[in-house]
Length: 453
Ligand SMILES: Cc1ncc(COP(=O)(O)O)c(C=O)c1O
Image 1: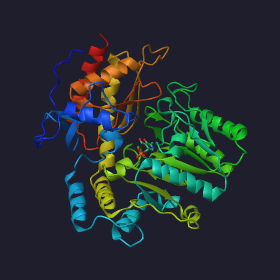
Image 2 (image 1 turned 45 degrees about the vertical axis):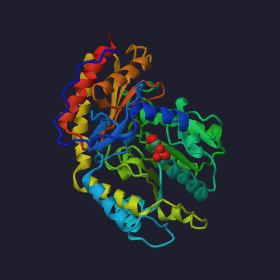
Image 3 (image 1 turned 120 degrees about the vertical axis):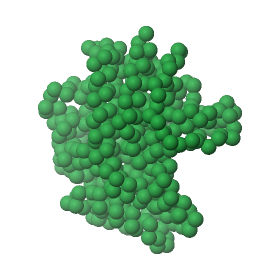
Image 4 (image 1 turned 90 degrees about the horizontal axis):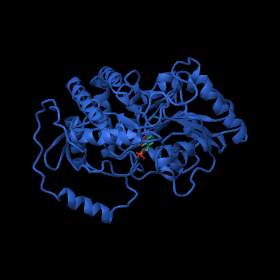
């Protein structure tokens, strides 16, 4: 692969500390010998990241990269954001851990603040804290089954909800298929993908038409009574697939008629990332019964949460619910500082404005590169789907891998996903600037031009 001269990154005042640890090759060898072969690694020529500052990452040689993927949508306000680091430092110096068996103000104060981000009328005000998105989804399923007394769960094809056994059962991307079946009691409905599915962007009734499949699944695959329906408002790992307008309104109605609860997995779409709304479900004009979250809530801390209404939470009160690390003082300090920044520093508006600028740049690339079949998403959760032919829409998976690798060599790290591995996923820390967007577009332009040769 020829490596083009990289365009200059925007200037940035940060010198990474000299790296003195094991070399990249030594690290790779240790990883290959001592870590599970199941752990996915991006890039044919792996990159080793040893430092981060806001929207930038540094490898062991001191080379700077623009982070267009934020550790899979996890770093919301910037790597090592000084206010977040200060909050963790203070908490770490004072006291690191006890469990929820004692009182601590951090968990209570953060729960109050988190609850305030939901629409008042939703009643979504009771929080449970976990350590990951998978755990949050596990707990949401348990809660829905406990509350409804039903067992069947509905999810969407092309969904990703995590890697614990029950979350893996919900996940329906063939790349992530479990070696043993995990999804007993889970039924998958048609993915409402307006680019590839039967009802396209030009069909104003697409939401209702795709939702009809959920009715069929309830009718033909369940007893008619279900525990819950779970979906991401925009499928993340599945390749930034946006649900059509009105889709969730129709589905939620059917699910509730079948006695079920509606769960919105906001692990990627929450905390202002879609720009227009704080929570992804708000873009669909619906109110879920349970919301799950993780990743961006902690700006890199391993934490997650489930938020629900008091009546649903009550169904868990007859059981013991305990999580050793969920809601620990350090994670809560980190989540609290992150939420303060999101709420007080216009981060959602920024996701909207900079995301719009990035979307314009990607659409411009689409007008010049035939391989780009679709550009979609909201705010700073965007996807670029590559095809071999715009009519047949044959997935250009190899080209996607090539563009992705070239972009890395040029100083831009982005994600890759979708059922066919042919979607570039762009979800940077929400502190990126217009200059960063211009750099990103220049890099992608070079990478697409070179990959097409
Ligand atoms: C939408 C969604 N739900 C759940 C998860 C699982 O989260 P975790 O990896 O923290 O368990 C992910 C992770 O990528 C996700 O994207």
